[in-house]
Amino acid sequence: MGAIHVGESNPRVGFQTQGKGHGHVVEEIEGLIRLYKDGRVDRLPAVADVPCTWALGPDLMSWDSALDNSTTGVWARIYAPKLPGKLPLLLATTAGCVIVSVNYRLAPEHRLPAAYQDGIAAMTWVRQQASGGWWRSHVDFDRAFLCGDSAGAAVAFNVAVQLGPSAGLRGLILIQPFFGGESRTAAERNSVQSAARSALTLAASDAYWRMALPRGEPRAPWCNPCPGAPHGWSS
Image: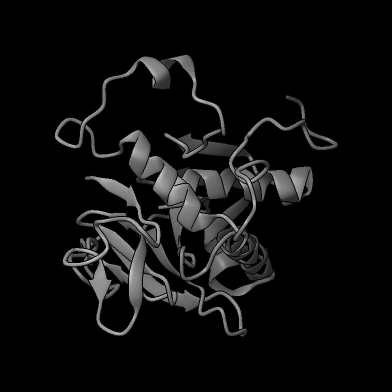
């Protein structure tokens, strides 16, 4: 995938970067996402929209649940194996545990800290379920884990840091977290990257951050995992 940062006078503004009535394109990751000047976003539907009952095995049940009553529209899909006793809880995206997969809001329609706020809302909702019903009889809330992959891992990390030890988590599972600083690392400076060889080039990574950050703000502290350990956490 290729990423371009388009300015007012960029010669590419024209055939490839003009939307009908939406102005010129200000950010684009080719084949994935395009952001226009007026805020319109065109994105490739890379993930199929399927019902929670799709392709479930005989030993698994699943359902969707709204996480709050506000206008955010945040919801989660719950997967639970049909096993006896109380099971560990995994907030993520595995067998032998109850999984809560959170559909958090995406940038650039909803810039940070929206995704982090949705993660905290999910944690709050899960803790509220511990008071009774199906959750109390099937879930061991003393074995709760927060997990994420790529951008989801960055969300999981920030949620855990903001909540601190009071979150009551047994562990944090980060799969290739999407962190990044202002300065290039030695590996970034010396790497040879091309759209043909890598699904995430440096240009694409920079474009993702520009579209995710609050307007006009630098990457720190949004994408720096080590600005200083919060109170109560060891570094």
